[in-house]
Amino acid sequence: MTASVHTATSTIGRWRSSVDLHAHSCASDGELDPAALLRHAAESGVRVLALTDHDTVDGLVAARQAAQETGVALVAGVELSVTWERKTLHIVGLGIDPDTPALNEGLALLQQRRRIRATAIAARVERLGVADAGAAAATMAAGGQITRSHFARLLVEAGLCKDAKRAFHRFLSPGKPAYVAGDWATLEQALGWIRAAGGLPVLAHPRRYTLSATARRRLLGQFRDGGGRGLEVCCGSSDAADIEASAREANDYGLAGSVASDFHGRFQPWIRLGGVAPLPDGVAPIAAQLGVPI
Ligand code: AMP
Ligand code: MN
Ligand code: MN
Ligand code: MN
Image (cartoon, rainbow, N blue to C red):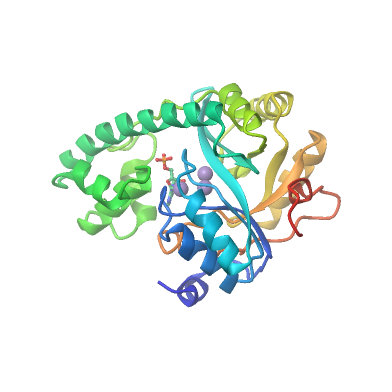
């Protein structure tokens, strides 16, 4: 897998940001190992990169080493899974100390719940006709967190659908046959763990949640009052209307803005590392609070 493949298959705008505060490695559902991710950042012109794997900080040691070798400034991060009013939200923590006990206790809890959910999803995927889905997902994850993305890949490999997007749409989304709801951290817990670790909590991909206008206001108010500091105003999948709406929300709630591709590698080929629009004027960049060169 090379950088050129991502570039060639991207269908979104040609934005190139030198700061990217949301990316995955194979410690969760990214394609690249942490060192390869840092090399890919350097090749892509990304000078500041946050590694934000789902519910784990296991990639950060290797990422830190590779950051020194490549000259990319690494922001230690994590993307925590949260259940809020029966919906799943993602809260990114930026600039965390990964050795913080409270954070690690929280991660252990989330990882245990991931294992339980993976077993339940595997049983459903096996019923759809994929033999030994649990073992296959564990092998694919290779010690990293098992996510729905791994099951999506298994469904594609088994020929049940053409690509991961279709696997989510047909099998792995709420109401579909292989969906199992997560039982994740509360918003208060996630904010507390990130803050205990000295990090800045950022609401990930804020336009991806289906919320009524009042629920949205309730969420943003609770997030800000609980110590939330930023919104991903510019994501890898944002259009101009998304950016405008999130910029307004950031300013209304006194939150900084983050630029965040949510890069996963060839599993989500429409997203490029650093393929994010610049923050609109008037939005305070969260990177300015992280002590990194921007
Ligand atoms: P999980 O945290 O195990 O529920 O997995 C969530 C991950 O699945 C997200 O972080 C995405 O990487 C991936 N995902 C969710 N929806 C889709 C989709 N429609 N197409 C491709 N990947 C998706
Ligand atoms: Mn993911
Ligand atoms: Mn996410
Ligand atoms: Mn993510």
